[in-house]
Length: 94
Image 1 (cartoon, one colour):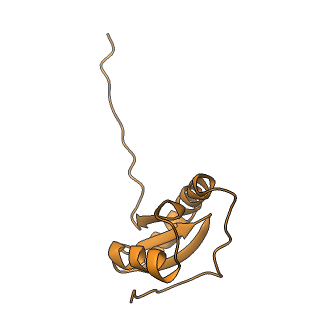
Image 2 (cartoon, rainbow, N blue to C red; image 1 turned 180 degrees about the vertical axis):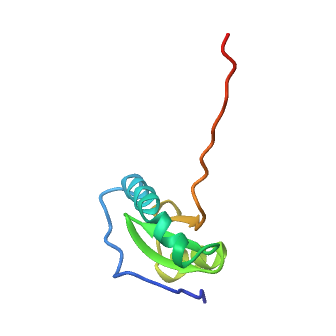
């Protein structure tokens, strides 16, 4: 069983998994800085824009979402809680 550190209320299912995934990515990006302040290096799961859980490993969250919550694989996202990477690319001017 996954060690779930935090959990919100039951999942509010949106109209489509794709829409739910987009909402979840937006929610993760919105929450990233505050998550990093409290749980750096851990993993977080979102579905339909709702944070489901934070755990020590990615595997724990997949197991939790697929088995315990019976979500479809494309209905949720799992992300590492880490700072956003900003890439700068210097291109030569021709």
